[in-house]
Structures are given as structure tokens and as C-alpha cells.
Amino acid sequence: DADVTQTPRNRITKTGKRIMLECSQTKGHDRMYWYRQDPGLGLRLIYYSFDVKDINKGEISDGYSVSRQAQAKFSLSLESAIPNQTALYFCATSVGSQPQHFGDGTRLSIL
Amino acid sequence: TQLLEQSPQFLSIQEGENLTVYCNSSSVFSSLQWYRQEPGEGPVLLVTVVTGGEVKKLKRLTFQFGDARKDSSLHITAAQPGDTGLYLCAGETRSGTYKYIFGTGTRLKVLA
Image 1 (cartoon, chains in turn blue, orange):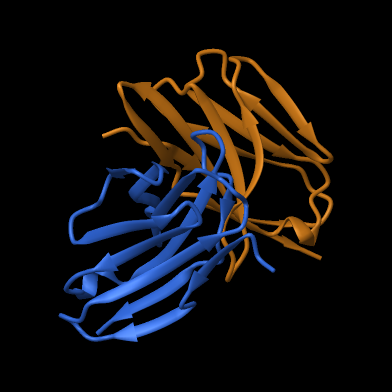
Image 2 (cartoon, one colour):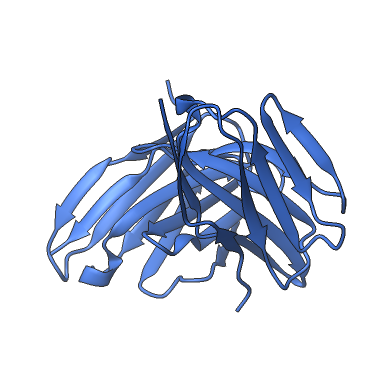
């Protein structure tokens, strides 16, 4: 079983829809992160959480929200999806402050 | 805006050749990481460098952190097709708030 599991792996949806991407981990790490990856732009940090009660905005948090339901679960929501949120989304975990373990990503397309 | 610039963006070489990938910034990093990413997967951490001038080796891969901790390089000796992938550098700055940024990546293809 993967240490960091993201669901769904692929999603196609329409503009204006609410979408939730889920991430669960079996590493026992306190720290979790959400990134988006776009061609030519690398990975950019959306939100991060250093423990269950700690939520912080990253570089590009506008249009996104997160929930840390438990140490092992960190979900990302797009309240009203727009086409420029089409991207590859990654969840990651760490012990220190550098993300160490990434999920295999969610490919999200917004039409 | 802090940037980590990687060069080259794309590299296609023959098996057995050597190559170097560069990661440069105007910012000072408290640590720098290199990752490799393959299609359909997340990045996999290869190495962390912390001290200016530090050199680390991982089989045929040699990583160096610049003396001023603003840049890094990855050198691959005798590249193999299994080295094909997207190489990403990333670094953490200590500027009051947490800031961890990724480079734009170097896409390497090693031809058999």
C-alpha cells in the first residue's frame, strides 16, 4: 500500500462545481502539504499544515480551502472550480519542514 | 518573488554520457533538496544538502551545494535510460515565515 494516497487520481468537472481532493497517509508524519504542478511553473504550495490544529496559506491559496480532519488526513477543496485551476495536484508529508513523501497526484480538468 | 531557476530545461543525451543540471537563485537557502519525478508519479526525494560547499554522492549522482547556499548542481556520470525523468530542486528559506519553493525542473531523457 502507498504511504501517501490521493483520491481521486483523475477528475473532470465543470466550471462552478465544488470539488474535494482527499489525501491520507500512513507515515505518521505531523506535517502535510498540498501543491499544484503546472507545465513550466514547477510545484507551487497551496496550503500546509504542521499539525492537526495548524493550517497555513501557501503561495497560491486563493480559490482553495483545506481541512485537516486528523493527523493522517488532509483534504483540499475548490469551492467553485474555474478552468485555470486545471492542473496536477500533489499531497505530501514530512517530519521536518521539507516535504519528503508525495502521493501520486490527482489530475484535475475543469471544463 | 523568490525564484529557483533550473538549467537546462530539457536535456536529451545518449547512454553513457555525463551531464550537469544547475539550480540557481538570488536567495540564500537553509537547505536544498533534489527530487526526481516520473510520469504519473509524485516527486521522490533524492538528497538534502544543508552546509555551504557540501558534496553528496548517491551512486552515479553527485550533488553540490554552493558555498553561499544560493545554488546547487546535480552531476550524473555515465547516464543510463533509468535516469530519465524530471529533476526538481527545491529549497527552504528562513525569512520569518515558512517558505519552500521548487525550481521549474529539468526534463532529462537518456537514449539507449
